[in-house]
Length: 190
Image 1 (tube, helix red, strand yellow):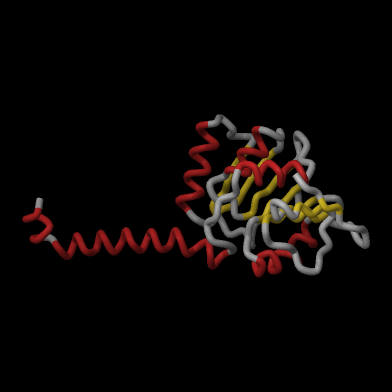
Image 2 (cartoon, one colour):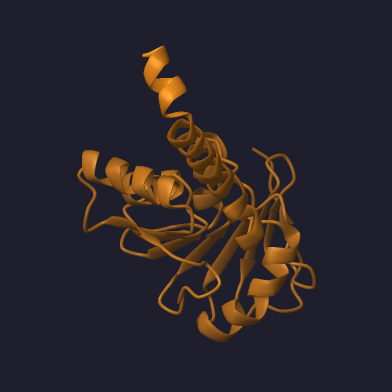
């Protein structure tokens, strides 16, 4: 084995560098397109969907779906038609494997793509766990595409300039309702 490594060291070095490049792309690509790869706990994801008052048959879209946990939870627990978009091929693959394993195809899906280009006009609820700047860059598109009464739920980062209809300080969840103006925010705890 050592003889092969010594004899073919240029190929070994190329393989190691290629693996490092793939790892770096997997880590840093999502940061440049929206947010680092942070996972939402099941408890917080459940709370986000509950505060959004997701009903069976409603369409939930997760922008930056990661491993698909919110999409899967929305389909399984809330009976929603759930879909997500993820730019990282590894996380996209993992999400679709989990959807297939749980036999949720037709109820849940995650597509490989850029969340900024993804159409959300049919969504009843849009889920975000993105950076503040990314949230800001999505505001115009969300307002243009979503129908009045649709909800936008963001974890940790607000939509500056929008007044949330519900604020969960304990979990850092902001719920916004499209078309709602001039009303007070309801603060909910646990």
